[in-house]
Figure 1 (cartoon, rainbow, N blue to C red):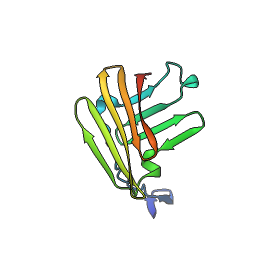
Figure 2: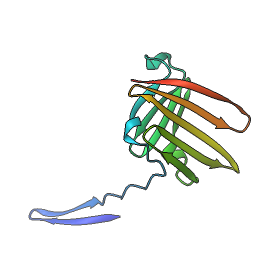
Figure 3: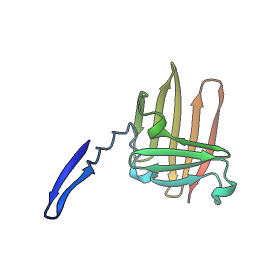
Length: 126
């Protein structure tokens, strides 16, 4: 929405800042940052970037911004001092992303989804 500002030397028209849309994601602060299966992101198969209100997954031709792509999708989070688990309902299927803290620089990542075999990967903090 436009807003008009009256200054001594004229009237200026500007745009009001939109309030940021709420995010369904709230990663705990112990996981904030960049985590990868390889120490060099260029050679990584998968990398996750966690912020206070988003998850970004990238790797080998994939870039997925959870907050943008899933803003109208039901999400359930489980958060503890050593676990961040995200369950996402997509077209009557539940996809689960689970991150277990091993120590300050290592987490265990597991993805659980229909038609995908259970897998687990160690991620290191970059």
